[in-house]
Every structure is written in structure tokens, then in C-alpha cells.
Length: 245
Image (cartoon, rainbow, N blue to C red; front, side, top):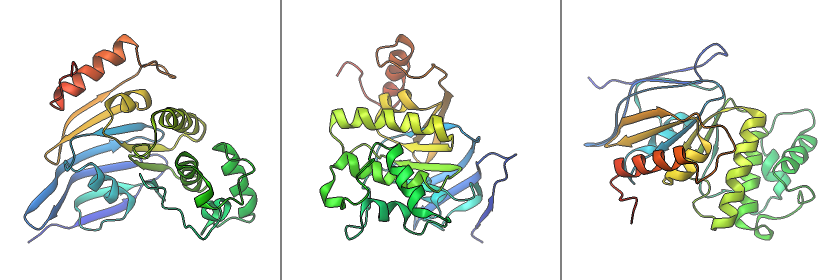
């Protein structure tokens, strides 16, 4: 008999995420196998791994976008997701995208405040086509955080941005996390990015967590800090990349 997943929601005293024996298969292909994972309230966790290792599948399970998991899963009460593609509705303004479905006595005021927080004060009426790629991603962040989630899921949100915009977006996410303190699961291919932002780094290989280490360097972090450089080199080797290339 095939096992099925059990899903419950965490309370404030519990980890925001708890997985026990979590797995996911697509036909005969096993994508995730026997994942045990706890994420504490306010903890920032980065997930690294080669393409196809199961990173995004893990995120989709936690977001409730995939109901094919086996094992036990406990998640936050209302996870919010920011994808690589901002996924804005082109026929709605920036403010309308942020407040879509928001249950609040004054959703407009909340939405205006959220846009101001991500640096888009005065752009409430702008259509997505009038915004740059970095600005659209800021709208996506505002849409996620306006709901005050206890779990924020980031699926390579900066990978489509140019280098300078990406650095700016990384700084924005750090500041927003410090202000709101949701637990974060951040999927990325960029080792340096993971180390700049996260408290803890996971490495997934063939569907299993093979590395799980904390990184306690004070923020904001410098890319040339010796400890960050050393950890970056170690992780790249674990990923099969020569740091000298």
C-alpha cells in the first residue's frame, strides 16, 4: 500500500515547518526521498542543489501546490510564495495585484504601505508593463508580505534580474526579513547569494538532504569576508564545481 501525507498547521510554539519521512515521486522517478526537516519561526534557510535535485519540488510541497507527498508535513498557517517569474496580472495595477484577495478592513491602505515598503511609493497605479523586471519582483514581494505570512517561500526570485538589480533585490529581501521575521525557505542556484542571506544552508542531492549547516556571520555580510569565502569554496566543491574556474 502506498503511504500518504499527513498535513497539519503549526502553532506559535512549534517549528513553522516540520517534515518527517517526506517523499515525492512522479511515476517511477523519485524526486524527494525521506526528507526530515524543521524550520524554526523567523529562521532563514537557503536550499542549494543541481538542477533537478528536488529543490523546487520541496518548495511546492510546502506551498500547498503539490498534494502528492508521502510522509508527514507541518507548515505555516498561510505560506506566501515569490517565484522567479513575478506572475502579476497584466490587467491589474501594481496596487490591485498586491491587494488581490486580501481580507482587511482597509486593503488599499495596507497595499499602499506594502508598496512603499519595497520602494514603490507613488507607483500604485502603474501597470506591470510599465515596471522594470526588478520593480515587478518588488510588487511580488509586497503581495507576499502584505498578508503577514509566518512562512515565506522564495523560488529563485532574483535569477532573471541583471547583476546590479539583483544585488539591490538581495538587500531588500534581507531588510524585509529583518523587519517582518517570517521563516524563509529560499531556493537558489547561487552559493554566494545563499551565504549572504541565510542563517542555514541545505544541500539536496538525488532528492535527499546531504548537507545542513548553520552560518552565523553577522549581517550585513561582505562577499569578501574570509569565512564566507571559505564556506563558498566548500559548498562549490560539494556541488562539483571548481572554485578556480
